[in-house]
Length: 202
Image (cartoon, rainbow, N blue to C red; front, side, top):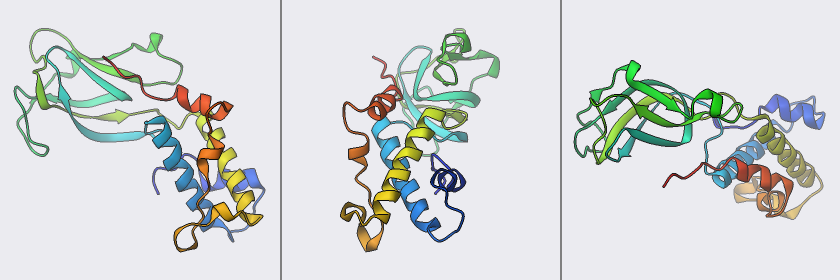
């Protein structure tokens, strides 16, 4: 799976594993922990490079990008509602695209969360699928705190599985850890994950 918060090598180093016997199991646990953490935070924590998204727009000059954006390759806007695929858009000049908050005002290592369009030309319409964005989204790398939490969870789940934890068997014998136990309300892990939830703009 491409969306994995940690590598197999990191997991095996953490657990002191030197053979490949449990590589499939560890990969499944990695997939599950990644899915749970990204669902809980409501954020894709694995970097995206050159991704394309079509978003609704409100009249003005601001596009909110709650998952975060590091760079804009292409920004195109529409004058009216557009279909989910295709559509008619006009490109905005790179010089007229600004990312905010500016780097000096962002939390260290965090992406911008808004795109601003300068000037009076090319501003946004109140439109469904009003903008098409190509760029690099989210964090440049999985945040170290997130990786630490994922490694803790995977190591705990693997140890429980090896000890015969009955909670760790799922469909077709695949391991299904009770991740909610590891990220319960009131834990330090949950408090950290809550910090990574996107800001919702009003």
